[in-house]
Image (cartoon, rainbow, N blue to C red; front, top):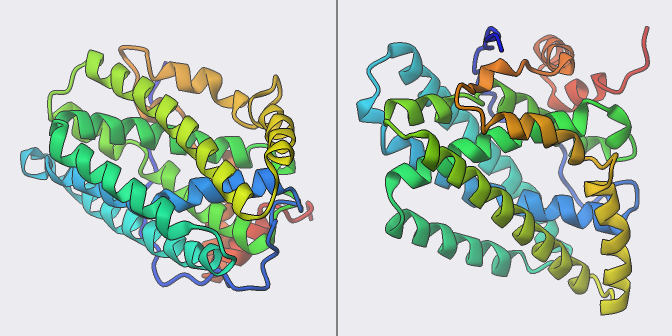
Length: 289
């Protein structure tokens, strides 16, 4: 598989998505399960981004390549902005009455334990695996625009911005992992670990949020049964990730063997022209001229 030319990592700061109470409670087309599953993923981002930055930062002194040094700086700036914006969205969920403090607090304690008790090499391998998964999720949610067409425009604009930047910096942790001398075995174990843990915990948090919304146990089972088909069915939104996810297990894999989405260039042109992340997000869904 041939390498593809990578794209510059461009930190974009002071972004305003209009994340206020006018956003519908079930912003994903009125679907409670889909909304709360996405919310459960969003809640994990601020603490997760801090973990990623810490994991990469630990090995920064070993990096001698000036280009990778600059990529690490830009990676940290992008991840910091992702944490800031998603913290604002989490504040909105908190005002809806969801137990955000409890969920964030538990995740914070778990990640602090991992940083203290697992090796720096393991933490970096987990970060590289997460970066691969988030880049694939960008493709999963925006390669077929029908997936997000009924979402609130402000939330999907936030998702689009995050997705496009994930594609820009998707190789930074992986390249740092190579500098750190992390081998194939640990890379594979970290991917299997984080795939299972992330899936189980986000489904758990989605159930917690639905319970907080007042859905009974039976209602939650029905919602989750129907929703899991949307996620993992033969044409599920995450089922499309199967092949590129498996590519990570090839010994000669590198993230830049996967090109960015064609929509990336469309989003980048709109953002460069307008400076407005919501307008850039909407440009993805505009009918052809």
